[in-house]
Image 1 (cartoon, rainbow, N blue to C red):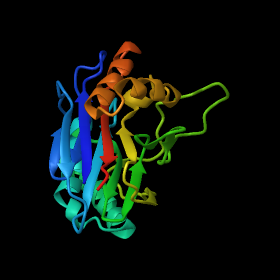
Image 2: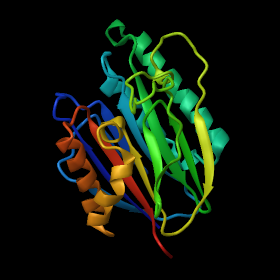
Image 3: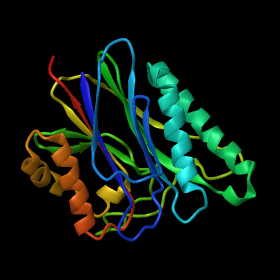
Image 4: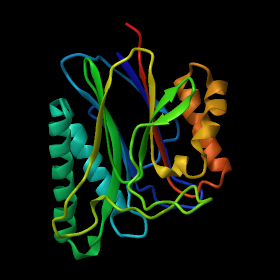
Length: 248
């Protein structure tokens, strides 16, 4: 059994939420939630996808792009059994975003990041494109499992808004290099997926203190992280999904 707690909220300085999320077949697309939602999924023969996506800011249709991607991955989630099927699904999502943009000149350039994991009976399959992230919340502190598609940072620079790879972004076909990794399924493990609305204003090294205040209450944990991002200025939309693999 896995518990997934999801919260998505418009940042303080943003008027529109371009983030989307999915857990199993459930989706929260380009809209804000007033409180975290927790869903429970059995782990066995049916894969369970958990996904967050961040529409490309400064371009039209970011909300549509993120919603399209998480909806498509949620729809085919039971087919995401291994790395090749996930890679093929991401290629299909990339093509779908480009096709939607090509059909409407007002959406030219729309794109989105994506980060997610798929829980199976014996493995956790982690994937991403762009700078949305996935972490294992280990006892020693958060361990980033995803790879940022961003230029190298300058000395003293912690974040950047530049992205070198997204889903969509151009009408023309382009090579997509999705990041994929497989981890063993371990009961008791917690994972966090988030858009940069959390990871940019609140450094991951600050998360353990925030999570300690919540103890084993996952809804409290995501609220504490969200509040920290708001206290830091809420410069972007904030979406996070906390996944806990429950003991048998």
